[in-house]
Length: 276
Image (cartoon, rainbow, N blue to C red; front, side, top):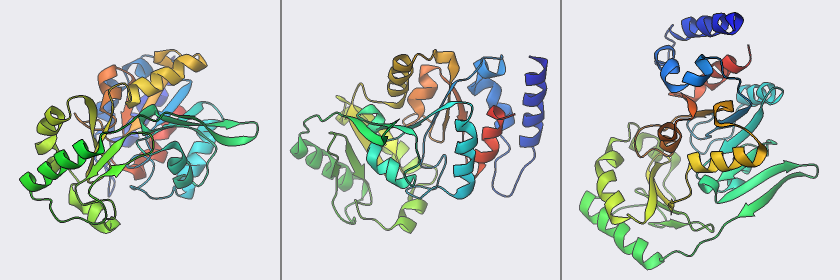
């Protein structure tokens, strides 16, 4: 216990030193966001978001992040949890061998003896006319009437994505559109009211995601943990979108230990808390 406390203290001191891109906040946050870990709880399951946490949005993993996952995988069970389908996430990760909960638990891929394969694919019916009508209402009200591609994306699972810039917006425009999420946060209460029968998330860099109420990252991780025999205090989650409405926010609200990743380039160093 003394050894672990000393290592944690060393880690906190190191992270309190600013770098060119990192906000020096992790040292202050960790005791609040991961209290069980700081109190000595042994972690066994490391769950992670992808976009904004391990990579830039919709961008492949770099070699440093891949090597970090390799090291983590030697000690812990690894789980990726995202809003895209499990297959899309698997492809974005360069087919990295990791269990994946996609669409917040509606799709699931697992590493098996035969390799990675899709083992779950929930599909629910969607009232497309309702979504097209209501999303157009928000476009007209908030001035997002010009967009690229389609106005709404209907996923095979039944999850729906309302991208304010459309489904085919250039990546460079998406990345600078709503960096602090204030544009979508201003709309969020009304979006939740209109889509009150769905779980609503501020997703990606320009969009809102809609899923059936029972599909969110907290419930998805808890279901997976119970199936594989992990207690809640044996889980730690790495994510970038913990603010209210963010697609990682259910992890925070549910009370799981988490590390709030403010810059995806910090992930390899943040992972060191589990590797010392």
